[in-house]
Amino acid sequence: MPDNNGMERVKPIAQRAPLSKPAPELVVGRFAPEQTFKTRAYEALKQAILDMDIYASAEPAWIDERQLSEQLGVSRTPVREAIVMLEHEGLVKSVPRKGVMVLKKTKREVIDMIQAWAALESMAARLATLHASDEAIAGLRRLFRGFDDAHKPSDHLSEYSSANILFHQTIVKLSGSQVLVDMTEQILLHVRGLRQITIGRDDRASRSIVDHLAIIDAIEKRETERAVILSRDHTLGLADYVAAHSDGIFE
Image (tube, rainbow, N blue to C red; front, top):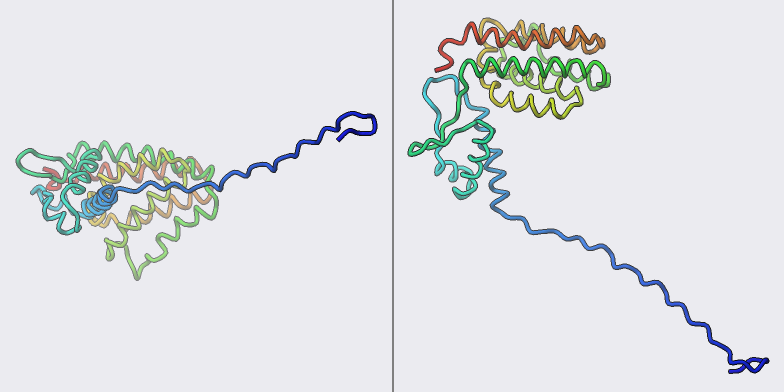
């Protein structure tokens, strides 16, 4: 239609409403049951190996794949895959025509690992004094509240051994360093079984808790150098003990 000046009026172009984007779609891939079974088999077998008293006998310990698959209620494939993972961690070894053997470390290997552990944990103790919160450090002392003259570590070795290992793991975690945590855990996989044996000899449990409480005191007071020395010497004491008193434990 022309306007008053005789010119054609241009109709405004209607604006379109902006297109709304579709709601985001949750895309979940199907998981493979055999992967889940492998993980479960790995975790169950690893825990069973860690719970074994492999140094109590000179005879090697063997893993029966068929028996394991029956006990776990899975096929032999995830069991074999779990064994491969454990072999990479140095916990087992496949022996041709014989089967799968749970590995024991030599005396020299154990001493070397404990010495490395001492270095890692003493650094962890240093970092804990510098960075850990008071609340986190307080958790160390709570680990041993259940032990006293009426409940002696030497009379409850299994319970104390568990608290003992947790104590060392906690110190490393207090460092705030995941690298230290991962390296120490790898070492503990191979020495925790031996530590459970040695802790019950020569009343070492009673002396151990005294050392632990001294380390806790140093960390609580933020006495860095004392915490480093006490932590290092405590763990090196285990290396010295293994060197001098491990006859009959290793082949």
